Structures are given as structure tokens and as C-alpha cells.
Amino acid sequence: MRVTRLHSWQLTVPQALEWQNRLSPQVSQRNHISPPRFIAGVDIAAGKRRETATGAVVVLSYPELRIVETKLVRGSLGFPYIPGLLSFRESPLTLAACESLSIIPDLILVDGQGMAHPR
Image 1 (cartoon, rainbow, N blue to C red):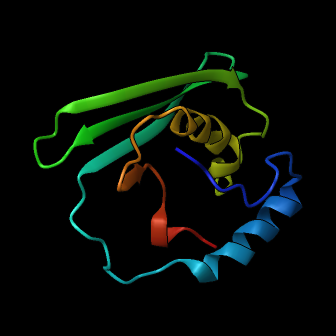
Image 2 (cartoon, rainbow, N blue to C red):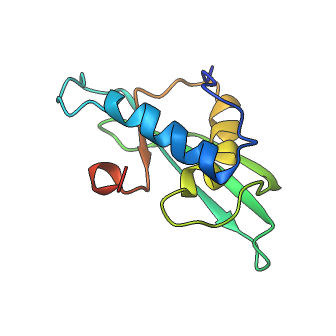
């Protein structure tokens, strides 16, 4: 799966806030999704010291909900834990897991605040 990179993940906190403000007007609230064939879910699990983590993606067929592919990527967390900026901490590993997929999902579910996010 090819992932378009909008920026480097090596950002300062002010740069991360700037990116959120720059991207937020692009969020679509329209329901324009075609029925999916493959749905992916992504998340990370951090170690006890929270310096390293494992990013995971699981792809299911739809509507059968049969697992068709899973990928794990382990690595370091390069951004501090700051509420409201967790995507900058977690996305590099989850995107790396997605990039290793052979199946391109039609829909990706992400644990996040969505429209409730402050930015």
C-alpha cells in the first residue's frame, strides 16, 4: 500500500499544531463512501517504558469479516505523549504497518477523536 507523506514526522510541538490547523479544513463530513470490500483497523501498543511500541494493521474482508492480512511493525516512539497530538506519536508506526500490506483497504478505522478533536 502506498502512503502519501504530507510532512516529516520529525516535528516540534508548534509544527505539529500548525499541521493540524492546516489539515483540519480538509476533513470531509459528507458520506461518500462506496461499499467496501476490505476494511482495515490500526492501533499501537506501547511498552512499559513507552519508548518503543508495536504498530498493527488487520485487514478484514467485508461483509464476511474474515481476516485476510495482518502486519506488525516495531519501533521507537519519536514524539512525546501529548493529548491532542497523539497522531504524531502513533502514526509513523501504524503507517509503516499499512505500507507493508499487499492488500489496499477501502476503509481504515482509526481510534481517534474525529470531529470532537479540538482542532
